[in-house]
Length: 441
Image (cartoon, rainbow, N blue to C red; front, side):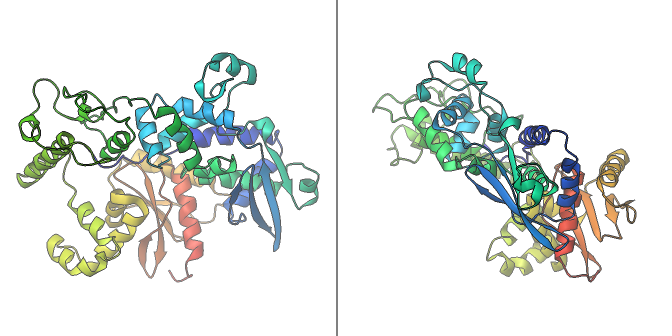
């Protein structure tokens, strides 16, 4: 059983938004001009309200108010979206726990049928063929543009409203909650609709990963929302969502220990399942002490140390961490910043780039070069990283396949927010962070 999922982007959702947004501009030159404005930092804070996105766009010292509007989702459409999630246990577990994962975003981006009779779902196919289905991403024909500039006041797409559309695409790369809010359905609203559909059903088994484990937080979420069992009817043969994580086949090793124990009060898991987790934790601890790793995965000592240091009171433990790891305080502090921006992979990237083939670095460099509006200065491959000395930014490949942005300050490279699987997006994040910092290099 694992405690977290690996990084995953919302690329399918972003792709659908970009396609619909581009079609909505109807081939206008403002689409490309808006992209240039967005890349140059002209778009201010993005606001989402039911039925619209809006932001201030600064052009030549003039602040214009631009917006994209579209219909909010109806209750019927909300039921259609939740129906798409019901048969995916991992999606059910995450949404019931209030998490809008990338997997859920992918499912919501797909156009699904709308049931004619609401949540009961009797006429999905007929209704779907009639209305064309629903997606959390508004259709191209639903998007409307407005702005305080003359073309925008006439309801036509302009450079400024197009820039807002590109800003939305960038924000969606980090999560779908912004789009749900703009469609009039917050994450909690979608979770409430889903909860109503699964109240009296037993969730399916969570799919195991390549190591044969499932995520503990997802398993616990499904358990807390499982319908209550009558006394004496609990499954004792290893069936059910939690039981899938136990040892398969034959009597379970924890049965003799738990048969005489009373289960704790809800929503805690029963004694048998708590014993499974304890046994699993003991096996992992035994493997760590023996130096053989846990669950087939190498032990990441740096991630363990930095995870503690990154807590609110962790800075007081730095002297202990220096003695335990043999690393100097400056390196550990840099790793702390990297961890806060990108998790364990960010902590490692803060110390050194992950080794990748030269071809990967060259492709990333070419992609970044092609994305720049102005080609001032070169981008060099130095010590396994992409460095733009003129701009004072650097990209480092991480051990998880993402690119981590850094900015130059005081002769050092400091981690910045905005790591991404796309080197172009990471480069833009580095430029934004560099602009926000003092000019000392």
